Every structure is written in C-alpha cells, then in structure tokens.
Amino acid sequence: MEQIFSKLVFITQGEGFIDITNDLKLFIEKNNFDSGILNLTSLHTSCSLTVNENADPNVLKDLKEYMKSIVPYNSYLTLSKSRKEISYKHYQEGADDMPAHIKTSLTSTCLSLSFKDSNLMLGTWQAVYLWEHRFDQKERVLNVHIIGEKRQNTYNVINKN
Image 1 (cartoon, one colour):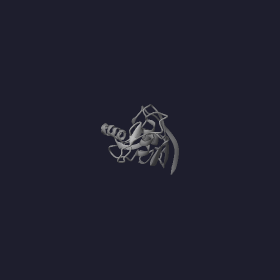
Image 2 (tube, rainbow, N blue to C red; image 1 turned 90 degrees about the horizontal axis):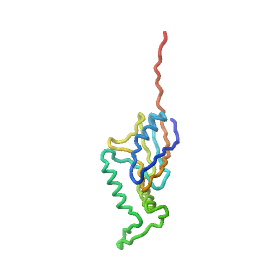
Image 3 (cartoon, rainbow, N blue to C red; image 1 turned 30 degrees about the horizontal axis):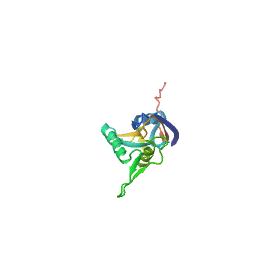
C-alpha cells in the first residue's frame, strides 16, 4: 500500500462547472496506481466539488439556476412570517462573494472516490465537477491524497537457450 500527496490546479472561467473526471483519471495513471482511494479537497471557500450527471448539460444549468434561486446576491429574505430582507455584511470582495461562501457551505469541498484498474468507480452518467461560485476567472487548487496499490509492471522475459 502506498500513498501520495499532491495538488491539481484548474483555471475557472467564472461561475459554472468544470468536468475534472479525465484529469483525475490521468493523475491516477501518471502516478502508476491501480486501485485505491482518491481524496480531493478544495483549498478555497467559494467553489465546491460535486459528482453529478454528465449526459445532459441541462442538469448542470438547472443546478446553477436552482442554487441562484435559493442563494440570492446582495440580500435575502428570512423564512419567518415577516419575510424581512437582510443584506449581507460580507461584501468587500464583490456581490458574488458571500453568496459563493453560502453555496460552498451547502455543497461540498471534499470528495472521496474509489478507483480500480486505474478507473474511477463512477456510475454510467456520472462525472466529477469543480463548481465555481464566483463571477470572475479564478485559479483553484485541489489537494489530492491517494492511498492505494501501484500497478504491477509486467515484462516479457525472453529465454535465450
């Protein structure tokens, strides 16, 4: 059993999803792992990680729109009977900053994924996404921790008799 710690860096193009599934597969292969567990941790408070459908792009559009509806910009209405409007106190980095923190809190910054034969064990229609919650392009760093078995090297032995 072996383990490695590393980082993967992604540049986002603003609010939305980046499919990082193939990047993770290549990382596993490059490091010569066969089977094990891949732990991912986003080192940021305004983006998240999620596993979701990769077949219909409308799923990601609907997720983004739904999240915007429950986490509005600038202020929100309380759930009490009075429906009082409350403005965010944290706004110094822009109107998208506090909503991004809330979205990250509602989703996940860590994922643990099994892999076998150097392939992530995902469902047929699943992919791993980095979900950017900020408006602008950002550099995002993911901490990667793999614990697993390395691939066995097989060599052809030539018998010289």
